[in-house]
Length: 276
Image 1 (tube, rainbow, N blue to C red):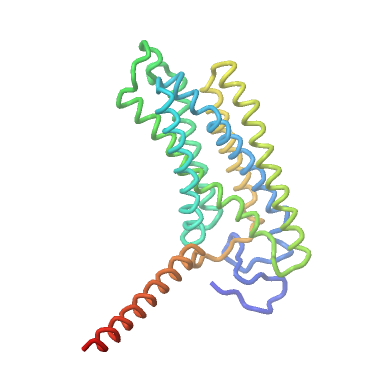
Image 2: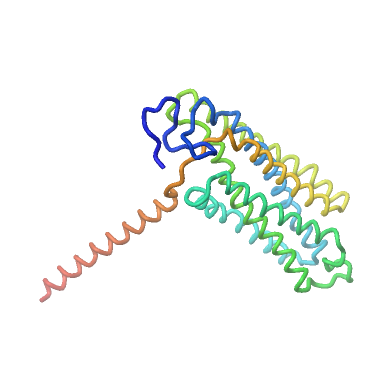
């Protein structure tokens, strides 16, 4: 969808929640971007607390040895970070940022709820049976919960920050300055959320040996952040879906490879022609 140029107070390439041309006086700015601060703060609170305590949780509650615990945490963290590329591609090409955020928040919260259920019921963990290894059902619960969180995080991280950044017009000097302030406040909210995670939630899980409450608070925080994002849906500027930057990079690399192959083939033809 392409908006008409010259229309007063409208933004090229952006629409409102109804699919109509977004207007500067009604959509975007800090009043819209502030909802992302809550979402990203709670997301980082949950993820950082999980990352800090996951090794000890796997060793103390799931009976992993230190090598297997470290490998599991490394695989989980690597998957979550790599999936951010997938989440960015999907939000740019197929879904809006808002839709990506909502779906990802639901997926991530389901992962934390599954971990909370496993931590609450002794029958779902091996610690209650004289330190036996995980059976199939216990392992399935654990890894489904972890990788639902990884998938959700892969959508939350790229879509949350870019949804807020979309609320500022780069061509407007005033909004360009506000965009710089937005990233400062975004970083502050992320750091604040992480600080709460590594102090309050980690204290609950370690000192009180209450992983159930820690995971449940994480799930509740992400769902609360999602509700805040939904509350602001009428104030957002939505970027019109188009080609993802990742897709354009891939297409550029593909064209370069084709060109180089074509040049190589021509050189080979000239070389063998000279021999004959």
